Amino acid sequence: MYGKDDVRVEERERPAIVEPTDAILRVTASCICGSDLWPYRGLDATAQPTPMGHEYVGVVEEVGADVRSVKVGDFVVGSFFASDNTCEICASGYQTHCVQRQPGAASGGQSEYLRVPLADGTLVATPGMPDADLVPSLLAASDVLGTGWFAAVAAEAGPGKTVAVVGDGAVGLLGVLAAKQLGAERIIAMSRHADRQQLAREFGATDIVTERGDEGVTRIKELTGGLGAHSTIEAVGTQEAMMQAIRATRAGGHVGYVGVSHDVSLPGLELFFSGVHLHGGPAPVRRFLPELIELIWNRTIDPGKVFDLTLPLEEAAEGYRAMDSRRAIKVLLQP
Image (cartoon, rainbow, N blue to C red; front, top):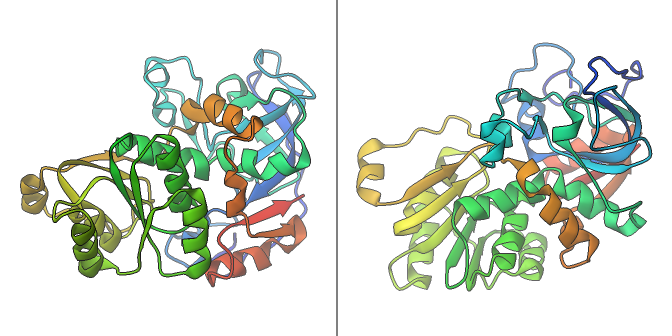
């Protein structure tokens, strides 16, 4: 990423083991994240050319001397934060806040090879070499599925609950899938796009709301007897989306927010009197990976459906353009 609207595919040195806890992967599949669009649109500054990509699956090519949980030849899924998965914070399920965490340590996933620090705590091996059709779903688990799942958990989606989902990108759509798997009774997807509405229904949405902002809040209240949703997923990161999520949630309800926050500020008095719980942030994907891999391996869920455009890595710039213009929900890149 060189700057606004400027992504280039370049030849770089193959990564090497730096620490004895590292692993080197041959990347089988990577993809473009909605959060990658913030710098692409110039909303996040790019100080220097930056390797992009934090979602990846692949085959272990080399391991450091201290790596024990994965071995050469394993097919692995990784998280976008490196974590040791042994500290007290990791043990409580918040690996993105690991005492040794390395945000962006596995950056550069849109590549042929990738160095992953803290490999024992960051990577999870699949039961074997996956069938080709499972690779997109396993790739989704490395971020957007894990993030949507965390959002649903943070919102306390579950049996008997009505869940509203603000945001119809890949994370929001997989938040729908997660809410369904967690047993939600009713799932309201907020979307204005027919293709995303259709996928939301495939993932388990029972209702579609096309309105936004205060009009969207009013519609959610109408659908819930004037009370609002029990659980709301916020998967955008803007002021409008956050306030829509809070206002669409009933007193005592929960908002799970995972949209990367950009210029969001909360009115203290309104929040004070809302009676709404807020919980979220960068998803501890590593917490959920073993469960998600099993669900995918057993073909219980098919989150790979969010990839509606597949391109060779050499055409990554076109992938960014397609997602920026909303011609694609999520782009899979094949090295």
